[in-house]
Every structure is written in C-alpha cells, then in structure tokens.
Length: 352
Image (cartoon, rainbow, N blue to C red; front, side, top):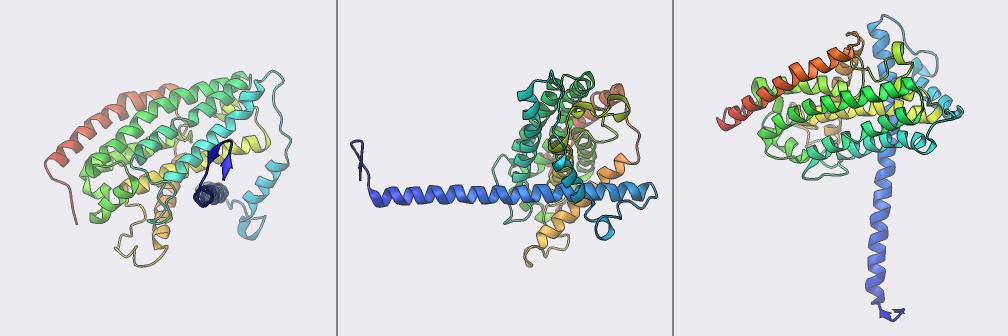
C-alpha cells in the first residue's frame, strides 16, 4: 500500500492498527468500570454516613425510600441531576465550570492505583505511593479554583483555608507513609502487600508503625476536609465554604469526591498498614475474590473510624488546626521516622 509516496506493509499496518484499537478499547472498558465503582461507592458511603450519624445520635436514619432507606441516596442523586445549574453573574465562567472536574479526575486517578486484589489492579506502577501523594496534591487546585472563581467572599475564605490545611497536613501524610516504606524498601503497592505475607506492617514495625498509622489517619481526615477538620466548609461560618455558589451536579461532584477521597485514604491505610487483600488466616489466594472481601472489610472499618471522628469531636479553630500539625504531628513524625530507621537497621522487625 502506497500513501503519499510512502510504502506500507499492509498486513503489518493492519495488525498495528488492530492492536492499538484493542488497547484503546481495553482502556475505555477499564475507565467505565472504575466510573461505575466510583459512583456506586459514593452512593453507598453517603448512605453509610447517614446511618452512622443516626446511630451516634440515637436516631433511625433514612428509612422511607426503598427497603430500610437503601434507595435514599439514589433519590438524592436524581434530585441533584434535575436541579438547575446556577452561578454568580460576575464569576469566572471557565474556571468555575472547570473546578469540579479537577476534584473528580484527581479522585479517579488515585482510585486507579489502589490494589483491590492481586488481579484487580488497574495501574500497578513501581512508584505507586509517590504517585498517590502527588495526585492527592492536585485536588486542592479544584477547591482553590472553585472558591476564587465564584466571586463570593465566603467561598474564597473557604478556598484559602483549604490551601493552608491541605499543604500543612500533606507533610504528615507523606512522612507517615515514608516511615512504612523504610520496612518494605519499595514504593510499588503490590510489592508492599507481598512483604506483608510475613505479617502486617503495623505489627512488623512495632510502636513506630502504630504511631505512623495514627498520624496518617488524623492527617488523612484533615486532607479530606472532614470534621473535626472541616474549616473549609464550616457551615456555621461560611455557608458551605468553597462550593457555596455551586448547585446541581457540580455541587454533587464536590460532595461525591469528599466521600471517595475518604475511601481512598482508608484504602491506602489498608494497603500500607493492614496487608491489603491478605487474609488474617492466610487463605486469601486459595478462594477467588476472597481477597476483595478482606480488602473492603478493612477499608470500610477504617471509613467507619473516620465517621466516628466526625460525630464525636467538635470542629477545631484555624489556629488549633495549624498548631496540631506544626507543633505536634510534624515533630512527632520526624522522631518516629528516625526510630523506625533504627529498628530496620537493627533488624528488629517482627516476622511470622
């Protein structure tokens, strides 16, 4: 075949085109699967949040739409889809419309790296932990854009708080994960789980691993802008914070991303500290999909812990928020990472 004076080997050309087409089709199918997981997980976590809140407050919770209120979040989603998309007259239209997609795409990128099971892992790269830390830093851009472009002083204050809070607590998240990387010697999430066949890292690493886990959960809760660290929204002060001027599906994107980010933080903790899909009884690989059960059980348990934080502790002031990070968590993290290095250097890890 000759095109513009260039001769092509037709069978080879067709095989390359077919291979590329199949690769693109495969990526599209995987993307659709993860979008389905994203939406279903978001709806389930919203329902779980309401149930947990009702339980803590001695209420019944959702019980009208569907059996035991199971379709309540579906009804809420349909309501948001049908709502009119409004905005301020003097807002920056382009950035205002772009901001929610920053938050959603960031959450999807992070979700793609999470190893649900040994075979259910969309994007297994050798810098998985570094990728997660880097990607999680992008989400705050959507919050800043949404608050600034809305041309609303309350939204802008919420966005500025988000920048301060996220940048501060990213340090503790990164250092707590780095503390555990000293044990594994790798950033690849699948290899980190393989190391834990000899025992979960939270057990192998003695007291420093427990401290790293506690710091990670506190900092991760702050990263997701949830109470008692919800200075970004602070309904009693700022209306709804950075998304005050958003409605309909654009508001739903921010709302959904918060719950997915909570799931991602819990999934990272499950992977790094609690062996991911590995069973406590050592029988995960003998039964198909049992690994997914253990992964979700551990992750939802940590999600419940984060919800427990929300409905137990009062909101912190901005000065208390920053004091907790810079005067307590960060110095403790630095001392903890040195202690973990000494334990690894001395060969004192616990193995089974």
